[in-house]
Length: 603
Image (cartoon, rainbow, N blue to C red; front, side, top):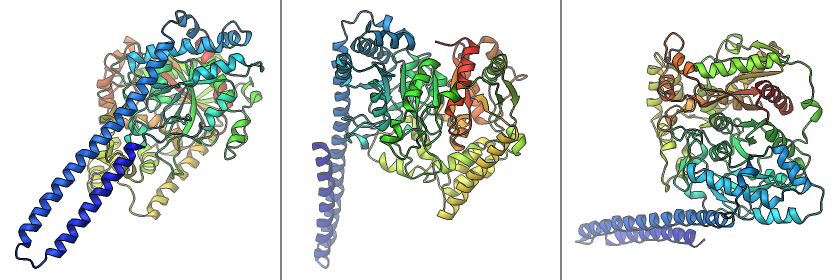
């Protein structure tokens, strides 16, 4: 509050100084020494602005430092509390069924489980920097649960990690941006309230990339997060800290968000499970987002977990009747157990090419192994060649990115005006500042050689009028209908497909290949639920094929960058997406369950 007041005072002083200078100039008109006086005043004005600028920067730096120190103090407090815990490994490695049983029969207390996960989470974060700060009130929640005589609830005593942009009462949601520091949440997000109602204990807040529009993770408040499987590679974004913490073993389940793969790409890169729900199925109340007002492409909140059983339990808890009671804007659609437990064979489509971006051999193999596994479970799996059926592939920049960045990122540039801009988003911000004529010229010229790169420039031009924007939204709506028609034409129950066209890119290259998220963008654009199941790891044979032009020949700039990035990725996790029609999350989970069982990955 004090810093904010000083900053406001700075701005008022600057305005007052400018007004006084202007009045003085008007008064001195006609005076024989007016010229020299005006020059002196101008120099003083410039000097004053410089002084005030550096004073403002000093206050901004102090604001960041104070926030960092608060987070560090919370980390030190929890680290000190759990320093003497000696059997944390035995607890955190238990399956979700074992943990629930131990918590329900009293062989483990909620406090014991919490402290074990607190210790492990801080241990993991010490290496890969995935935790922004612990939730200090977690231990009080654990004590309350242990003292309670109530019937044990669905998530009784289970620690749950939470992405930093989701409201926790008493904490700010910064998205790694200075402008949001100190905006303290007065109440928990609806989803957090639902979790607490089921006995869960929110215990750690996890890192995000600045602005949450990056597949890497770095910001000036909390630093850089690394992939727990390979520190040289990105853990994905923007639910980066969640993916990394769960993938590193420091949490069994958590909550993230997704507007263009932000749940699914970290899950894929960190080797864990997730479910991106239909927009509207889960309350967004209490989630910080920079896309408010854009009703065509919307973010969602969703669960992440280290194994399928944990994901299922968390989803069942989230999709409970009290969700719509707490947020009447959410349709009353609690988890449908009967739909999930159906056993009749399904007709499932698959594809390994979206018509625009080629997948590398390990990513193609993952889908084909998933296909074989589902066929072994008795399902019919057929090729869903939607680019041929529709007459076009999914042009993500045309149908998705153009609408997502309709303002050419002007709002984000305004919010970041006095902030340190991380390298992860600087390229995107600069692209939005290019002259429109230059973007259009680049789109036309580059289009003869590289359609993907050309489409990026085409998406960066913004809109000249509301009418033009509405025409583009109509194009997106038309695509949604054509895609649905293709799906129904094939009589599909579900689809499996790649998450990303390559293994996790290296951190030095990931921000150069943002359009590679196109396999996830599709299901944000059409608003279908999509889950991720880890299927396999990159093998030496995969890499041999990837670098053999007979098997894989990159055509676009992005495909060539990804090829360079794939060197040394042997052993890295590769997953697939499982997709169903809107509001069929239970069916999506059923497909994920069958695939998990067939692959022998059940917890």
